[in-house]
Amino acid sequence: MSLSRPAKFPLLKLPWLCIKCVLVNWDLFHLIYFATISNRTRRIVQHSKYPLNEIDVSPNSSCKSVCMGKEKNWNFTHDKFEFGDPLILRRNSEPFLTRRGSNWITGNCLESYTAGDPLDALKTGIEFMIDVFGCTVRRVFVDGDKLSELFGLGISTVKVLFLCYSERVNMADLKFLLENINVTDSYVFFPPIPENFSCDPQIFKCRLLLFAGCHSADWVTLELLCQFDVAQMSFTCQRFSEEEIVSYITHWFNSVNRKLEWIEFEFNDPSLENFNIESLNPMPFSEKRRNRCPLVKRWKEKDISNGMDIIRRDGLLATFYVDVTSVIFYVWHKRFPDAVQQ
Image 1 (tube, rainbow, N blue to C red):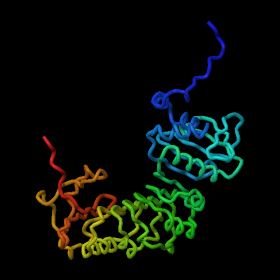
Image 2 (image 1 turned 90 degrees about the horizontal axis):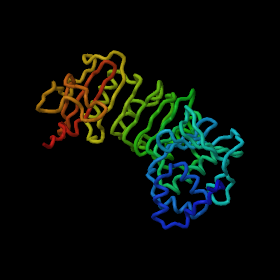
Image 3 (image 1 turned 180 degrees about the horizontal axis):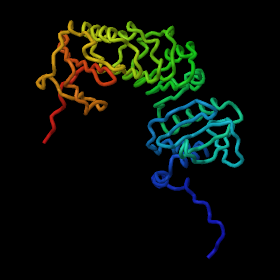
Image 4 (image 1 turned 180 degrees about the vertical axis):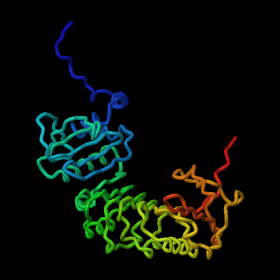
C-alpha cells in the first residue's frame, strides 16, 4: 500500500447535487473559507442556502465581532499572529490573515488580523456574510461612549439595538444614531442618558423600549412617555412617581391608543392605596371578564387577579397591578386564551 499523499478530491468537477451534498456536511467556518477561494466557490455557497438568517454585530473594544449563532464568532483584530490562511472577502481588497480558534469568552471563533482599521475590516466581514449567506443584521451591541463607531458600518436596519453600559454618552452621536438607524423590534438602553437629551418620540416605531440601566431613562419625561407609540415598555429602575404613573394611565384611558400592550415600572415598595385611580372607575377582578394571568410569555404564570380593571369607552380592558417591586399596566387586547382543541 502506498503511503504517498492522496490526490486532491476534485469537488468542483462533480455535479451540482453532489457538491451540495458535500457542503451540507460542512460547518459554517468551512463554508466561509470555501467561499473565498474564487467567484465560482462564492456562488456555490450562495446557492447552497445554508440556514443562516441573522447575524449579530459588536463594534466594541479592540476586537470587532460578527456573531453567527451560538458560540460562533468572527473577530477582526489588530492583534497579530503568525500562522493562518489569507482570506480575500472582497475583490481587489487586501487578504485577512485568518485562523480558527476557541476560547472561553468567544467560544468557537474565526480570528482575522488586519493592519488597517478593524472597523473597516468588520464592515467588509458584514458585507461578505450578507452577500454570501443572504442574512440580515439581528442585533447590534455598541458601547454608549463609542456610538460613532457604528456609523461607518453601513447598517441601516436592525431588529434589536443594545446600547451597552458606559460612563457617559455623546448626546450628538446618540441623537444621530436614533434618527438614522431603523430598529424594527427593540431598543435596550443601559448607559446613563442626561436629562437634557431630547429626540422625536416618533422615531421609536418598534415593539419594545427597555430602559435597563440606572439613569438610562432620566431623559424620559411624562410628556414624552405619553407620546411613545410603542407596544411594550419597561423601566427597570424607578423613574416616575405615583402621580406620574396615574397621569400616564389616565392619558391612555382618555386616548384612542390601541398600540400599547403593557408597560412595567420598577418601584420601591409600591402600594395600591397610593395610586389614586378612582376617576377611572376601577373594578375588582371577575373571571367572566378576563383571564387571571396575562396572555404573554413574560407573565403567563403571574396571577394578577388582585389588580384593578378599567374599561375604556371603546371597550378596551386594562388591568392596573401592583407587585412587590413593580407596577404593571396590562392591556387585554385578547381577554382569554384560545380554547384547547381536543
